Image (tube, rainbow, N blue to C red; front, side):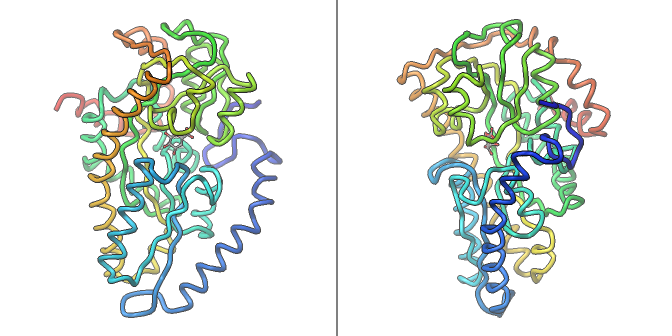
Length: 351
Ligand code: GTR
């Protein structure tokens, strides 16, 4: 597989399985678009009729990001006195993330909660969150997300046809493997790892001597099971809820990335809303964030316990030094395209 990405282009070349998938999905997208049009036609906006927006979410109903989406929807409905309804479609019902982003960009779906990794294909600076071992912990990440720089970065989504409403907590991603137990950077050598669709993540795995395989989230379980992959990486709630632990029992807690989650709406849909409704959406999103963070923290603790109880072999990493050293080239390579963001992350390293 060609593992070089051009921003805004597909990883898989001109005629690929995603293009084919999209051809198949087009009917569904068109039908969904039709629903949106008729909702708007019924008289959207303050004082008008009711509007229904769809929000695409890849995770199950009870997953912390989905709970955040639903809190957002509940608050929008409340603050608009029932005028604006947001239907949350969980479990990737509206497509895998790479397709959901494109559909929101085209306006076929109005909203999505999406990882910043695939978004970096559209807005290069979002690759910041895929840089390895960059944030010390969740507090460090949140100091950045809540800074002027974090807000500016969210604003960059504008240039790609999205309005960013806010960030959700992504936790930290760690490796898991089917056979080999990973304890040192050298253990990654020669292993085939599924990664998100991100050039930075491709370079990360390459720096460790592994073979990076970008793939949709929904295909990871069967690919681990069939031996197509030697491993993947994710946070505890994803590793647990997608049952990847059943087929990859070795979990190495190196916490290599904190890939911010994004709540986004199509830019034209946003621009078409009266100011009053824009304020309602923004207020609801702002209030859904602390709710999601609380749910997140609780879930990570619960899931780690459940994973251990399921017999997962957890390897703790005491010293990240060798991991940082082995992957420093990734930060060097991508630092240049990240402007001042990297400097601000450094400034915020100590509270
Ligand atoms: C999860 C993230 C999802 C998806 C998934 C993946 O942590 O919440 O949005 O990006 O990872 O690895 O594809």
